[in-house]
Length: 101
Image 1 (tube, rainbow, N blue to C red):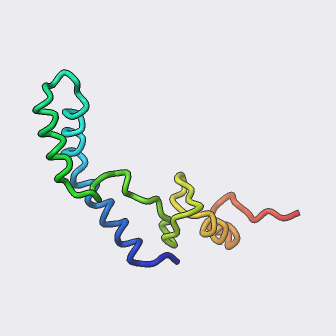
Image 2 (cartoon, rainbow, N blue to C red; image 1 turned 90 degrees about the horizontal axis):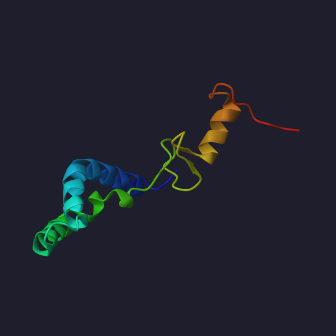
């Protein structure tokens, strides 16, 4: 099990990211548009810099829904390889069995 503080910090980042998503998208569009004059683009970049750092989507860490583990994460299943193996061994995942030979 991961540290609960790390899991909570990541949840806070997800929440902030959703809150500022539209604002960040609009400001980035202005900054990246070369047709807009330099002064307006600079002002947009300053506004973007004033937003919380944790509202950036790249700050979010993929974590297991069950254990909070950050490594060995399967995006499709939203869980780590260890949690997946445990659930498969217990027979909780339909169609998946522990392989042995």
